[in-house]
Amino acid sequence: MNCEEARFLMMGYLDGELTEEQKEAFLQHVNQCPDCQAEWRGFKSLKEETGKMKFRALPEMFWDDYWQHVYNKIERGIGWIFFSLGAIIVLGFIGYEFLKDFLLNAQEPLLLRVGVGLLVFGFIIIFVSVLREKLMVRSHDKYRRIVR
Image (cartoon, rainbow, N blue to C red; front, side, top):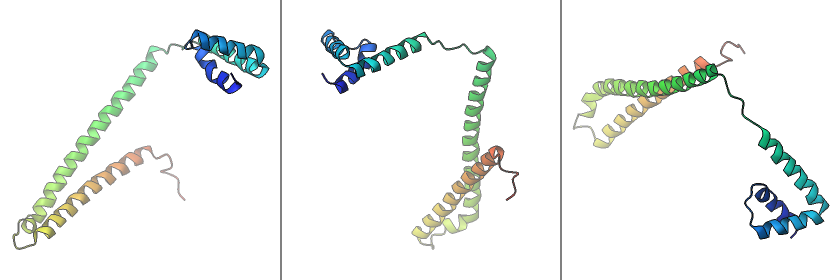
């Protein structure tokens, strides 16, 4: 066994994932190689120290605050989805009413009517998206009051 193979087996040994044959070959190499011995001692020490660590329990008020933020984010996300869909529907209806004579006019080519309809609908979606983004950035922009 060479040092590279031994390094590969070190974590497996610490985690108890090696077969008896692999353990014996690993320990035999570590006992003969001073570099691997030093690395092995370091890993054993690290494993012992991390095994002693415990998570500190958070006070209940931190959990309440955490869940409040989660609920707020979910509520706001759902609210923005409904707002965006509602704005798209209302603006789409306004656009349809505005272009109804044009879109339902059989004398205009179908391709032109479909193109104009898609153009208006795409504009409405982009408008709502940009408006939503600007409103979100405005409320979170910490450089808003800085004048260049």
